[in-house]
Length: 257
Image (tube, rainbow, N blue to C red; front, side, top):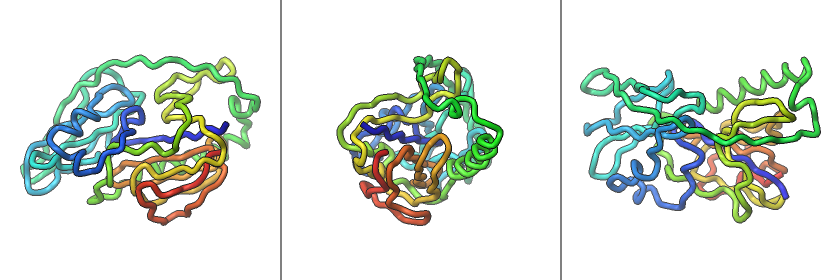
């Protein structure tokens, strides 16, 4: 069995995004708020911004957030909350025709379970100096892809489709990870255990912004779905797309490793 990790960052929470529903249905009154609002570390806050002729610009932690209009209602911001966020009051900055202002919201506490993993390759727990140079280069590339923001592009669907058929969720989002007895960064994705070679499908329409073979992730693809909504596919056996490709919702990006 192979494992495929799908990482969703900035504007969406990995644990709350898999359901097949068209955008029109998702934009009906209150649907997005009911389905996505989970203001916890690693979750999503859906914030009402009021009405107006144009979309407000909203930033959180110096990054623009996704803003959409619920049909017949108001503008809302879909704000991704980092796993590292502390519980308590947080603020977004809003700029629109009315001027600049701030909006406060509360992040609720959430405890994630721990997962203990034994890795056969000790370098993946304690990389060498040469490994670290490679890792730093790769992290810079991937960080840039994660920060991609295409203004004016509304994602085809905010509730993401499941990217693989069948299998089980082998590792949920947010787990505290302990490799060979040493605690490392928490799990910022979802792992699906499915047979190697299973097609990986785009959970929403997007543009390929990065393709690579990385130290920790193996073969990897980043898809930009618009307005900071980015998905990342790792541990692939084959990649079927290249940078700049426009991938439709459900289009194959590669195969499970």
